[in-house]
Image 1: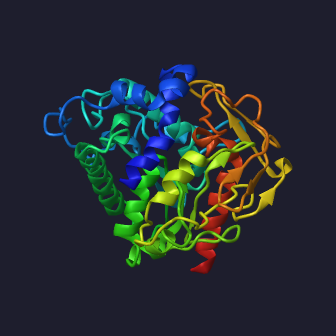
Image 2 (image 1 turned 135 degrees about the vertical axis):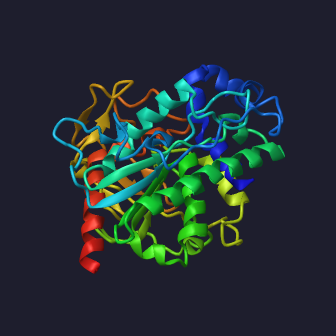
Amino acid sequence: MAARRFLWIIAIVIMIVIAAAFAYRLFGTQIMRMAMVPSVTFEESAKAPDPLYGNPAGWLAHPALPGNPARWAPEGYQAAPRPGAAVFYITPTAYLSRDRWNAPLDDTDTNDRLAIFLRSQATVFNGVADVWSPRYRQATFGAFLTSEADALRALDFAYGDVRRAFDAFLEDVPADRPIILAGHSQGSLHLLRLLRERVAGKPLARRVVAAYVAGWPISISADLPALALPACATAGQPGCVLSWQSFAEPADPKQIMAVYDATPGYTGVPRRGTPMVCTNPLLGAPGEAPAAANMGTLLPNSDLSAATLEPGRVGARCDAQGFLLIGEPPEGLGNYVLPGNNYHVYDYPLFWANLRADAEARLNGWQAAR
């Protein structure tokens, strides 16, 4: 239930693409439920064939995939020809249909959106890692607008694909190779479950360079202990979790806080009154940094064909609750901002160059420690 409610808040960004902001403010929840919640049962919902993760075609990004969008880089950067690590990156929600609970693997519109996410988010890692990103039958947007049991079934079904892809990833990546785990939105939800079920307390944890859990709240006391990895406290620290939620000021995160305060954490204790993990990507740690510390914000067009990096565009600071505040709304980044000045969709692009440097520093730290 908590996962669905968090995703309801986060996934509003998709509705901004397809609904007028005025209508959203007046009738938001009712409109979204009528338009987006599937009208069929989970059992009746048409399902695509299982993804085949032993084949590069079963992946959105794979080292052997022709035209891999995760190999893209803006001017002045390039993907490493022989990267030392491998990253498992889980995409956010991009499926909007209500004719089934889980996305088919061959939906053109969904795959086009996912390619944009790969280029604007997963590419921060291609300087040090091969990027693996699975096609998975993600839960549709409408699954996060209802408390129907079918919604939870859809979420579990999506995670099943992610888990199988992760197993295939581990089989193909040499056992001595370091790995980076990353996700965003629905992808971060599945990543947190992977951390709890497949990494915590396992030998695999020693291979984790870092886990980038972007755009998802993690309570320091109620959630983090279940992950068995600490929050990143210093730049270059390996084996830790990064998490941030970007807001311009004045920030109004009351929707997130209402759910956060009402739900238990992964350890079973309440989240209410507990601060969240906040990593400032400009520092690689909690704290405050001026815009001068920003090495490059990615300013894309619709398909990133002419994306540019602008340094010094945005500063950031962690507030007492654990939200990442970026100051006044930056020019040129406003089309998909959520209510309350929530810059969720820009969590990676705001700090693209710094996150790229962060991944390199943590890999160097991991190697030095061994």
